[in-house]
Amino acid sequence: MERDQSEVVLRVLRDLKRVLTADDPPLAPKFVRERAWPGGERATTLQLRQEFASRLALPILLDLNKLKEAVKNGIRQGLWLYFDPRRGCAWSRESTTTPLVEISSDVELILPEVAAGVPICDLPSEEVRRSEEETCPVCHRLVGRCICGIRERSQVLLEIAAEGLAAQVFQALLDQAQDRKVRAVASLSLEVQGSKAEFLRDLRAMALAVPQLPKATVSVDAYAALDLEDGTQFEFRYKGPWNRYRGFHDLLQKVKEDELRDATGRLELRLDFDGGLEVGGRDLSTIRDIFVQLDPGGMKLRAVPKEEG
Image (cartoon, rainbow, N blue to C red; front, side, top):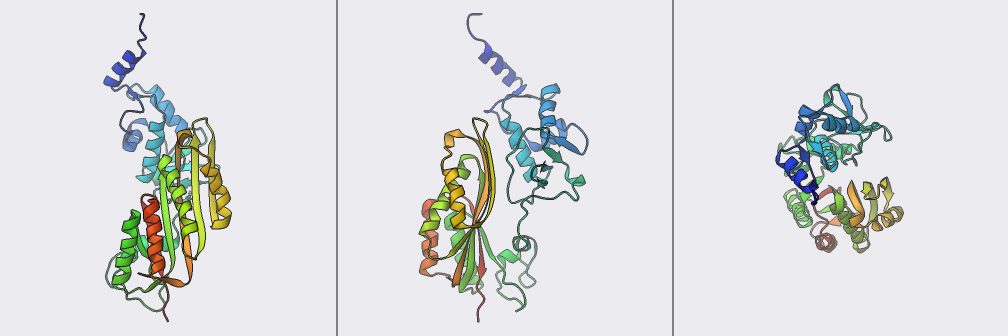
């Protein structure tokens, strides 16, 4: 035929649900687990791809990112763990970061029922885990949302925690501090996490905020993995003072959004204040205004009340 028929063939295959392209809905992790799992307790990501290429009942993956996203979502849903032999640990639903998924014969997905003893990457700190799991013995709320303000003197002060857009988390900080009669906080932790171009924009917004902040000791806990269109992959893990982090951030600044195929990671800024930060004071209002203006997207806030007396 004179006219190229490839678009016609593709349209027919899509109508028959025989192919998955970039425009199709996401691939459900549960579908992958039930219909494409090659058997056994472990499977490499390359094996999963080969199953889609060889099983007649499965659609052909014309966009490999569909499988990568399904793997990520399966981690978050607890359907499997993602084990990277280079890190020597596996990402699970408890991890605070998400891996940059690779289709490889080295990377394995492990079913949770046989994952006992496997080291887990980037687990939350003990303080955060306590605030998310334990309840206050007085008001019976999660300790991160305790409103009674009553505690034993020997007990560590409970954190104030909030999640949402910048304006929401700072308002929640003020509300919880007022309910618990907290006058000042010793430290603030602000965290963003995400994927793709939005994550890069959030990283840049957080970095722009730091030079404008009131006097504080700033430390950074960051993880990022970038996958560029030319096949370049870049991954780093940093934990330390802000002034040393700036050099790594300059590398991220050079990445253009149109060069980015995928990205994932998290960044946490911890601000420690000598003498404490007064709740409702001018400095806290300044910090709030800075983050509201830069709008880094969804974020988590944690504040440690200052010991009194």
